[in-house]
Image: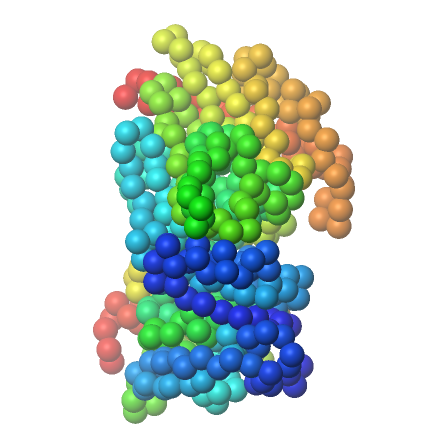
Length: 177
Length: 284
């Protein structure tokens, strides 16, 4: 990705050099950053906070790789300005595992079902499925497909990801190991 | 794929928001859900000088039903409107359409009023407003006005919202007795823009026969195309009428002939479903 102009200030357009203080709680930790209005949340996470687990694919909301949770709701971080998210609580893929590094149910299900190959799209799938299973803990195979319908994967052919959604639901119902 | 620089304000009231719009003139743009505006910014197809972010105007994040109308505030997200059972009971077409708006994750953020103001000819909610009638409330520093649905869409991505105006609410009529609705569309993949789509509202008489029907088509013209199907009398003839009356364009996604074919097929399906619902409601 061409990131060379990210973070430049004062490039001649009125207002462009202005930095805005933004407070974000990311995976439980409070961060304060100063960013231009145009800083996408995906870039803030990756560049300002060095949380590179959130991946950036298409940058126009089509691929789903940058999906994060904002106040528990799955959103595209490439379609959200950092300034708009001010005061919000964000969960990225780095925040899914337990403090001891134990995989979450969704992560474990991806490992069990071979739900990833190259792994580029995986952070977006994991966050999306985590939020969806909160709302619907017992999805049908049809609903599992609907859950992941907005995320692109070029490797797996999706079948193992659908299986991972169902497996994750099973693990969550069984309770923490 | 990064937005161009712009000024930014995040007003805490509608009064402040319209003052910001007035202060920044023609190059200011309202940011609500951002699910259409941010792609346009990222691809630099839009270069507003200033964004007025209305995401803090929680007084606009309402959905209400009463007096035979559904009112949707400017900050109500698609997901919130879709989850509201009183809305679906009052006007089932809203839910039938919202289920087809992009993907759940986009519906979490995108606003229903925003998608109507955006006036995309492929937009499901654009067709719903055009079909049902209703109105859009616009507020500016100078006052407020209400624009009827029939006058709201001016062209592709162009609605009757002036530079200094904020659309605060969309009002849609509730469904009458003995009436039914349906939405049908074909897209390349689930969640994609429709190659062709149709929203239908139909009414049956005491004997269960169709007494009126109208349809709004998406992706076949620059603004939603509304057709009166009453003279057709039923789904088969309505399909023929639709095929005759639409004149879609062709592009990379579909030829004009295929879109015309779909208009007929989808009219038959949607009108059949709307009539079935109307009969069910008139018995119940």
